[in-house]
Length: 320
Image (cartoon, rainbow, N blue to C red; front, side, top):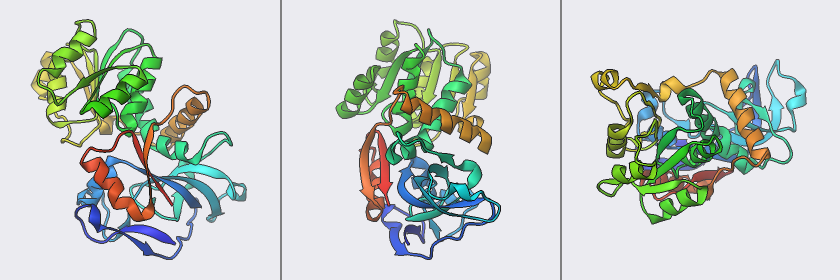
């Protein structure tokens, strides 16, 4: 099979397509013929050397979530899975390939009316969006700033918040991304422009935001944090500019409820629950992933490059 292999840490060009033996499904695993592989910013961080912190070793096949068709099953797995279309997670590696073995506990059987591309795009970003809104308990009347509002997860978060009746400011960089925020139905503010948080607060009726969902980190994250209202809720889930790490004393003084991405992580049963919800919401037309970049496996480096230089808009996928 063809697979995108990382043999050394470094820039996008270390991603190379190689011919590898097909994986053999172990007990409680499915072997999936991959149609579409999900691409997220975490994949780029692992490639740069972050894989060490995740307990991974070189070489490895990049990618952690896919949509495709079950080819075979491992010992102890019901054979009725064979031939079914699924969306599934392989962990932190293995997804950028023509075939991948995945734990059956992470697999969700897809209805006929949900495309592989949509399923792959929802596999991690959809679950993340649902979880972030769940842990911050966003309701009608909340005022929310979403930083990096046009990423794969950000665009879904904006749609979900608006459906809940929240007032939403989507912060991003550049007119192309701001146009997408407006298309999604939120107020758009460019976080690269000085004084952008004043515009964000004005767009929220002159009132401080009650919730900050920060997918940008770095300076935009710090600036948004500064205007979050006392008693507000925050999840820092993005790391393009380094994770936002608020001062604990300030958090206490302002009575803020702060969680990092680890606070929003889920056990396998929780992932399945939110995967099912993400897919059903797509079926009902309640949201849709914004898929703007599609590449073959041979162009995985371009997929990563677009995320790192922030030229990518919405979701990036690889076609196996």
